[in-house]
Length: 162
Image 1 (cartoon, rainbow, N blue to C red):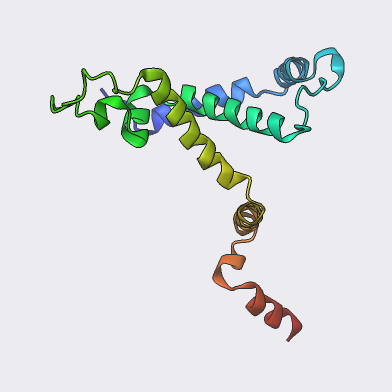
Image 2: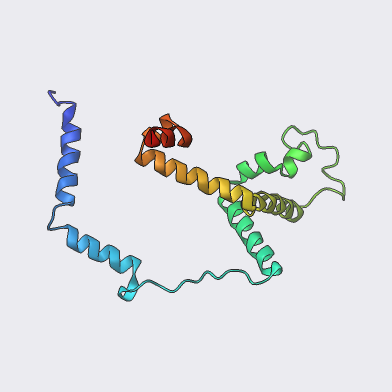
């Protein structure tokens, strides 16, 4: 009954140290290198930049489809408004649920893909990408040098120059 609270921590520490023992690391790194670089060389890239506007639109459509496939159906229903939400299917209020003008699931999926494509257009904006890259760079630099978060660039420059 006298199990100490530090026992799980010391057990975990022991297993991590035994796993990363210097005698185990070379085979692990060799296996990792073999998995990442088959035949001891980097693989050929299968990604090619789109050459025309049509290829770019097809690529964007495939990306939207892949994102849509990753999202659970309940999430797409809530955020993109599937047929059940528009027709009141959840609450039994759908007057036009049996009408021939009701939206089919294929049209619904196409509308969702169109919405996702419009969201992906934001990533294609040069101005937005520039700010995204600056924000990512700032995040990395602040993690490396926390004093950058206390003072701005102008204040740090004034401190350095006197």
